[in-house]
Length: 413
Ligand code: KDG
Ligand code: MG
Image (cartoon, rainbow, N blue to C red; front, side, top):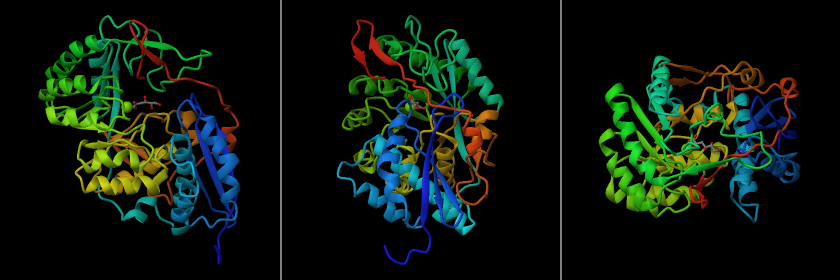
């Protein structure tokens, strides 16, 4: 394009972080302003980094960073082989960095560029987890004492020896990152649908008995059920008034949600493995879900996810962006800006990243208080990246576990 008065001069990718391989993109301009973005594709981190380095960054140099829409279209439409989590995480990081730059040029926090605040702060949920019920109840009480009004609950299932999803095994502290760095190949977990279906409703019952009706209770099935099982399960837990039931069935079969809807009014959340509007469209337009979980990282950045949020708004679908700690504080900030603005905001998944090491790598004035996430009024995304700190970390390969049924059959993780 002609008449450019601002140019991208360079861009660099960094991989690493405290306990996690964050993939951070930094875009420099000829005006001294820079922007940062997150391309962390959990446990496949080198791939978006390579995609950026080999294919996208060479094209970025010389472009006007203010044209974030055209740059998004250039990388999306311009690629013959579109979509997929690797490409979308790479485009997403560029897009976040360009919004960061745009906000810094304007001297405004990014949410002001969307239309300002719809709320003062965003409701978040924490992950309460227990190897058994007592453990879980203690974990919930602990989050409540920190002010959380919403918790996602995952519980070990009796006689399921290697734990369900989101439950760490005895002596392991893997529940937060879901990444195992110790083996040459993934660890294996065992899953038993029957045991899960029998036990899980009793857990909800005990939670309601102990904590009453007001606690917002979420639960993640993590793609483990068939459509019929999921429909029966959703129906059986209706009386516990869950805030949501997440990923009841494998996310690629969108028709599965129809059966669930026909049998239950339990609110359904889905989409953390989606990477474009095209994955969300049917579920939103047919009003088969209540919350959309796509993240700004895997979903191609702010530009594309904002489009999804706007489509969702006219179909009564609220946001519930994925916020597992695999996302760095950069994408959490990008989602924070969308959350403050979105008329159809629902809730934000939030795991405390705020270790001193993480704060030193990604300094920011955004903060958690009393169950809510507050966005600062710093220009841009309001989070920085300390390159000196980044020198402390290098890439280390890690895996999600894999899941098998008791007879050895592979199952959905
Ligand atoms: O990388 C996968 C994790 O982010 C995912 O398993 C976490 O399901 C998850 C959640 O809801 O946070
Ligand atoms: Mg999930």
